[in-house]
Every structure is written in C-alpha cells, then in structure tokens.
Length: 130
Image (cartoon, rainbow, N blue to C red):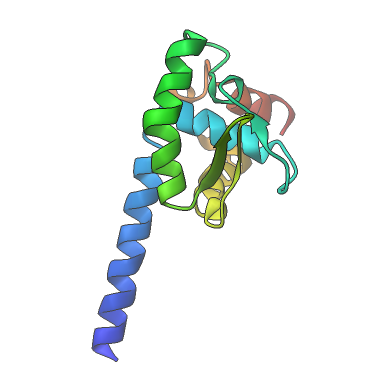
C-alpha cells in the first residue's frame, strides 16, 4: 500500500512537471489556447495558431522553432499531435492535462492579478465578458 502510494505520488509529480514544462513557452501556450477554441477533433494551422497577437514573430523563425523544439516536446508527452504537410496540430491523448490549466485561469480571470491579464487578449476578454 505504501509503495503503491509512493509510485502514484511520483507519477503525479512527474505529470505536473511535464505540464508546467510544456506551458513554459509562449508559442506552446498559444497553441493550447488555439486548440481549446476548436472542436476536440479539429486541427489548427501552424505557425499562425502559435502566435501571440500582441507580440508577433517572424513566421519562418517560428515555424523552425515549432518543428524543432515546441511541437516535439508537446508530442513526446502526448499533449498534441502534429503533421508537417499540411503544417497543423491537434489535441493529443493527454491534452486535457494542459487544457485544464487554461480552463481554470479563464474561469477565474477576475481573480488573476492585472499584471498577468493586461496584454493577454483571452484573459482580458474573459474578464470583460466572462
């Protein structure tokens, strides 16, 4: 019983570490939000679905970063699936583990400190219309 509890505890800790590592970069966060805005079985076009509208980046550079860094990290953990031709991403089998972070943030947008909301279109919208 104690060993099982320990194993479950270490599994949960590792899953949380993977979730926060996955959400540690803006293109990955934008991609998650873009996927949340679609039906579960729909894909999103890349690189445009990974762009923060307030801080645009060079599309060629972002495409390279997505293909070589961001998408492999998300796919290795099962959060997303992606294809290079056409360049799209969709929800992976573990997508709900990262989606819940944004769903909770959006549900409590009025409680999020201003310095984390102002400039974030989604949270600003949730505060205004939520």
